[in-house]
Image (tube, rainbow, N blue to C red; front, side, top):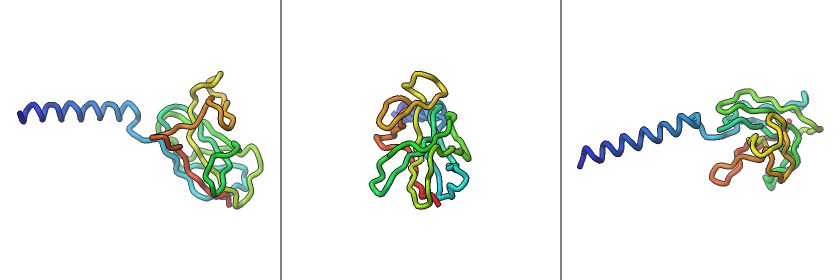
Length: 139
Protein backbone atom coordinates (compact mmCIF):
# COMPACT_ATOMS: atom_id res chain seq x y z
CA UNK A 1 0.00 0.00 0.00
CA UNK A 2 2.80 2.42 0.92
CA UNK A 3 4.61 1.74 -2.36
CA UNK A 4 1.44 2.32 -4.40
CA UNK A 5 0.80 5.61 -2.60
CA UNK A 6 4.43 6.66 -3.07
CA UNK A 7 4.31 5.79 -6.79
CA UNK A 8 1.12 7.86 -7.22
CA UNK A 9 2.65 10.77 -5.29
CA UNK A 10 5.85 10.71 -7.39
CA UNK A 11 3.85 10.44 -10.62
CA UNK A 12 1.60 13.36 -9.63
CA UNK A 13 4.58 15.50 -8.64
CA UNK A 14 6.28 14.83 -11.97
CA UNK A 15 3.09 15.76 -13.87
CA UNK A 16 2.70 19.03 -11.96
CA UNK A 17 6.40 19.85 -12.42
CA UNK A 18 6.15 19.25 -16.17
CA UNK A 19 3.06 21.46 -16.40
CA UNK A 20 4.79 24.26 -14.51
CA UNK A 21 7.92 23.99 -16.65
CA UNK A 22 5.82 24.06 -19.83
CA UNK A 23 4.18 27.28 -18.67
CA UNK A 24 7.52 28.82 -17.67
CA UNK A 25 6.65 28.08 -14.03
CA UNK A 26 5.60 31.65 -13.35
CA UNK A 27 2.16 33.08 -12.87
CA UNK A 28 1.34 36.15 -14.98
CA UNK A 29 2.06 39.37 -13.06
CA UNK A 30 2.96 43.05 -13.37
CA UNK A 31 5.35 44.80 -10.99
CA UNK A 32 5.44 48.59 -11.33
CA UNK A 33 5.85 51.62 -9.07
CA UNK A 34 4.66 55.22 -9.06
CA UNK A 35 6.89 57.14 -11.48
CA UNK A 36 7.47 60.30 -13.47
CA UNK A 37 5.76 60.44 -16.87
CA UNK A 38 7.70 63.52 -17.97
CA UNK A 39 9.55 61.52 -20.63
CA UNK A 40 6.30 60.21 -22.16
CA UNK A 41 7.09 56.63 -21.08
CA UNK A 42 5.71 54.35 -18.37
CA UNK A 43 7.92 51.46 -17.26
CA UNK A 44 7.07 48.19 -15.52
CA UNK A 45 10.02 46.78 -13.61
CA UNK A 46 8.91 43.20 -14.30
CA UNK A 47 6.11 41.56 -16.27
CA UNK A 48 5.51 37.84 -16.51
CA UNK A 49 3.32 36.60 -19.36
CA UNK A 50 2.25 33.06 -20.18
CA UNK A 51 2.31 33.86 -23.90
CA UNK A 52 3.42 36.60 -26.25
CA UNK A 53 1.24 39.64 -25.77
CA UNK A 54 1.15 43.23 -24.60
CA UNK A 55 1.71 45.42 -21.56
CA UNK A 56 -1.19 47.86 -21.89
CA UNK A 57 -1.46 51.15 -19.99
CA UNK A 58 -5.06 52.11 -19.20
CA UNK A 59 -6.32 55.21 -17.45
CA UNK A 60 -8.14 54.37 -14.22
CA UNK A 61 -9.46 56.07 -11.10
CA UNK A 62 -10.54 55.24 -7.56
CA UNK A 63 -13.11 52.75 -8.96
CA UNK A 64 -10.15 50.70 -10.32
CA UNK A 65 -11.87 49.92 -13.61
CA UNK A 66 -9.75 49.92 -16.78
CA UNK A 67 -10.37 53.00 -18.87
CA UNK A 68 -9.04 54.16 -22.25
CA UNK A 69 -5.68 52.85 -23.46
CA UNK A 70 -2.89 55.45 -23.29
CA UNK A 71 0.10 53.27 -24.16
CA UNK A 72 1.31 49.73 -24.83
CA UNK A 73 4.45 47.66 -25.37
CA UNK A 74 5.03 44.12 -26.69
CA UNK A 75 5.77 41.24 -24.30
CA UNK A 76 7.49 37.91 -24.83
CA UNK A 77 6.20 34.77 -23.15
CA UNK A 78 7.96 34.40 -19.79
CA UNK A 79 9.67 37.07 -17.72
CA UNK A 80 10.18 40.57 -19.17
CA UNK A 81 12.11 43.29 -17.33
CA UNK A 82 12.14 47.08 -17.72
CA UNK A 83 9.19 47.08 -20.12
CA UNK A 84 8.72 50.63 -21.46
CA UNK A 85 5.38 51.69 -22.94
CA UNK A 86 5.34 54.93 -24.93
CA UNK A 87 2.36 57.05 -23.94
CA UNK A 88 0.08 57.89 -26.87
CA UNK A 89 -1.61 60.81 -25.14
CA UNK A 90 -0.84 63.26 -22.37
CA UNK A 91 -0.72 61.94 -18.81
CA UNK A 92 -0.28 64.39 -15.97
CA UNK A 93 1.11 63.94 -12.46
CA UNK A 94 -1.59 62.54 -10.19
CA UNK A 95 -3.26 60.48 -12.95
CA UNK A 96 -3.80 56.83 -12.01
CA UNK A 97 -2.62 54.27 -14.57
CA UNK A 98 -3.41 50.56 -14.75
CA UNK A 99 -0.61 48.50 -16.32
CA UNK A 100 -2.20 45.29 -17.56
CA UNK A 101 -1.15 42.10 -19.38
CA UNK A 102 -3.07 41.54 -22.62
CA UNK A 103 -3.00 38.58 -25.01
CA UNK A 104 -1.95 38.56 -28.65
CA UNK A 105 -4.91 36.26 -29.40
CA UNK A 106 -8.01 37.02 -31.43
CA UNK A 107 -6.74 39.79 -33.63
CA UNK A 108 -6.38 39.95 -37.39
CA UNK A 109 -2.59 40.46 -37.41
CA UNK A 110 0.18 39.09 -35.22
CA UNK A 111 2.43 41.78 -33.76
CA UNK A 112 -0.14 44.56 -34.23
CA UNK A 113 -1.92 45.85 -31.12
CA UNK A 114 -5.62 45.76 -32.02
CA UNK A 115 -7.47 46.15 -28.71
CA UNK A 116 -10.04 48.84 -28.07
CA UNK A 117 -11.86 49.12 -24.74
CA UNK A 118 -14.21 46.14 -24.38
CA UNK A 119 -13.05 44.33 -27.54
CA UNK A 120 -11.95 40.68 -27.67
CA UNK A 121 -8.97 41.25 -29.97
CA UNK A 122 -5.71 41.29 -27.99
CA UNK A 123 -7.82 41.37 -24.82
CA UNK A 124 -6.82 41.25 -21.16
CA UNK A 125 -5.44 38.11 -19.53
CA UNK A 126 -7.35 36.88 -16.47
CA UNK A 127 -6.20 34.47 -13.78
CA UNK A 128 -9.03 33.04 -11.68
CA UNK A 129 -11.25 35.71 -13.30
CA UNK A 130 -9.01 38.54 -12.06
CA UNK A 131 -7.15 40.95 -14.36
CA UNK A 132 -3.36 40.69 -14.31
CA UNK A 133 -2.39 44.27 -13.52
CA UNK A 134 -0.79 46.86 -11.27
CA UNK A 135 -2.03 50.39 -10.60
CA UNK A 136 0.42 53.28 -10.30
CA UNK A 137 0.15 57.04 -9.92
CA UNK A 138 1.93 59.28 -12.40
CA UNK A 139 4.38 61.66 -10.70
